[in-house]
Image (cartoon, rainbow, N blue to C red):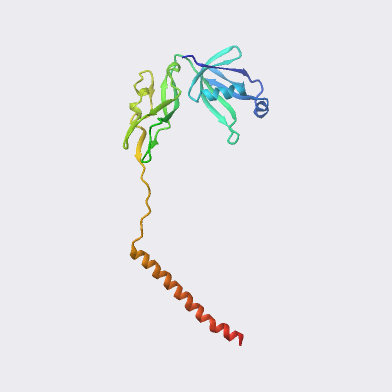
Length: 225
């Protein structure tokens, strides 16, 4: 499968990222053990298309001027309100050197999965792996088409755990999901004795209030005289 290709330009002036974004260009950087860190810029529309199709941890061909780098999409900064991409980080790789990355785990429920009395609890959101760039996985997707209450799936049961080209650093016994029973909350009914006791308390409170009102009345009459 061919890698995603993203084109960028060297960024000669740094420190004015806001002005760059107003020109619909997104600042980025590529760095690595075998190259000098380089500030780059990428057209905003290309960045938006890229992040819709690729997640952090994926590999790509990053073209900067006349140079093409095998790179890892390392990190992304997003504005907290507008959700606009603010900055991208890329790590230059070598095809013959293994790399350590963290990739997401996605659980997808089938249309017939679930019910009023069961719920799927997602317990593992990401895993850490080591592999050559050409053998990396950008994510792990788990499809659940059917299941019963009490079912548990561990990381070691997934296909990626059986791939000899990928070393998984996360504990293989880690649960990916489990299926639990959903119990409806039923408000406890009051016993008849509890209801009668409550009415008795209300009656006592009423008697006290009436007594206090009765004690105050003569004082008001004395004031009028």
